[in-house]
Image (cartoon, rainbow, N blue to C red; front, side, top):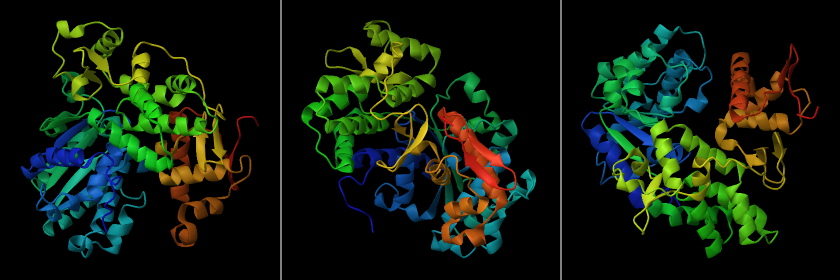
Amino acid sequence: MVQQSKFFYPLGKETIEDLVKLVFEPIKRGESVTMIWVPMAGRRVVTKFVIENINLFPKIISNFNDYLLVYIEPLELIEESARGYFRLVGKSLVDACLTREECRGVISEKDLKVFEGDKLSYARLLSKVNELVKKVADCGLEIVFFLGEFDELDFADGVFYNNLKFLWLKFAPLVHFVFLNREEIVDLDKIARYKDLNELLLQNVLYIPIFRKEIDYLIDRITSRFKRKFSDKEKNLIKASCGPHPYSIVVAARTIALFNGKKVGLDKLKKQILAHYELNAVSGGVLEVLSDEARSLLRRIAAGDRVEEETSLENHLLSKLGLIYKAEDGRWRLYGEVFEQVCLGKKEVVMTAGSSQDLTYSPERGAILFRGQPVEEKFTTQEYNVLMFFLKAPGVLKTRDNLGEVLWGEDSYDKYSDWAIDQLISKLRKRLIKVGSASRIVTLRGRGYKFIAANS
């Protein structure tokens, strides 16, 4: 049953409906779509919501039952390679098929197992993916692959992109791609790297802004989530510092909730938010993916230059993404004060109460913290559970059987795989480095693994 709560939609209902229409109008024409999202602004959450609740939009997609929607989540890659990616494509397609009566019957036990191991060569794996796509197409369904974080695949090369293009060519118009990117691609140097696939990437380019009209809705959702009432002054502080950036709003609200019990004044709250490590890191991530020209323009706007006298910004990338907006006085402004100070190069960062310089497990919050802030969004569910298992007892040996119980629970005996454990530990080590923490998972040959605490 579909939840009818006011807070069910990750963004306002009308905004979500507008996004669905923008994406599916080209798909109805047999085309593909590239969506440019602001980093950490809800790309994954909104996309998965639409996939899981496509039945909410019958007026926009009257034939929604004709589509099989498949999300490809790079965080679930066990092997960061083209072969690993197509294995994930096959596994994700099988999982999606099992949710639909139309194609559940054509999925065999062999299909369920073929994408789990690492025995197939790259060429054979591609063949198996093609066979599975044909089975789904023969059931009368069109497949829409939502390719998450597509511009962040470090292993991707010309051969990989061309293989994706071949998959589309072989089954068009029954296969569609929705590329979920964070970087501008309408640039000769950037689009050239995608080889033959660039034809699909450029068919329909959509810029998804952070929506100023959604600020109150997002704050109301957070109010419900934290089960506390934010005062009007606290809400205005969140609006001014974070603008409509969804993830930043969550972090700011969490910070206010943390300090609320200490009766901290508004001025100190503002100082904490503006100097918050995670908020500054998010703004830095937004800035990082922009061109030098865009960063220079942001610095000028942040410094108060009247740039609108020199160029029209209504159709500029920064405006399309909602990173800048025209204020009531007619001047352009950046979306939030934290983003503004990052653009101006102010980098002073203080940690929130109870912070640590590295990874810790907080029993009070039931979460893993890095420098005092939750990092759940940066790991897959399996990685996070294993890391929590390590951090609850750092320095204690964890056998492979122990890890198997964490990964597969009561089914660990039937599902146990040394290869899967090796791959997950390898992936977790790389993820820790990306987060900014040294990987201190030590292998004790023949015995298992141990996580060495920073002060050991």
